[in-house]
Length: 209
Image 1 (cartoon, one colour):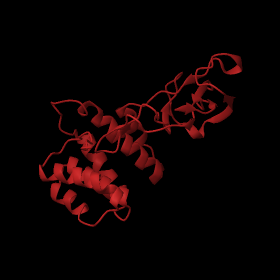
Image 2 (cartoon, rainbow, N blue to C red):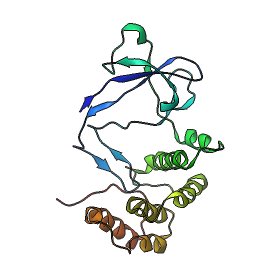
Image 3 (cartoon, rainbow, N blue to C red):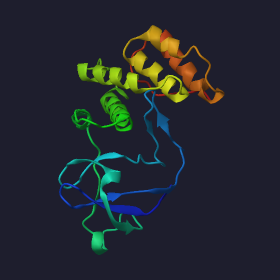
Image 4 (cartoon, helix red, strand yellow):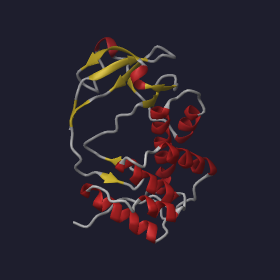
């Protein structure tokens, strides 16, 4: 992996400086992915869109913050941008808070609902004692389901997973009946098996070599 230039942005709330890293090249070696679509890739860091200011902790859309300049290295702590800090990662409640705002638009709403889903599932990923979905998680998944387009193969697969985690197994299975492109075959097979076993929790995607 190789980082590209780091963009320096100014927080619209406190006017202090935020580092917004870019990636010049990367790969997916060592990736771990789960059924809800979240992946951990050690050689491909997650570039966030919705972030938390590291100074005042205001929730921000990073691309909407004024650009002040660039530095070549993420770790550069000298020069005019020496006080800049890397943005923070929002928590589950932060996504719910932002979703309460009006006029988000479909793209932002879908991003927030997906990230809220992932954040809620984080405690279940490597736990043998998985907690049932909270009322807010159920409401979020029901809203996300309505935003997803069943005519899009990726969205249809995600709808199947949403319905599985909601315990609506027959509806989840119905989402998988229409053929998918061949590169979806392993994912569809893995998800179908979980549905048949009536498993409602997020699972790591494991495939035999």
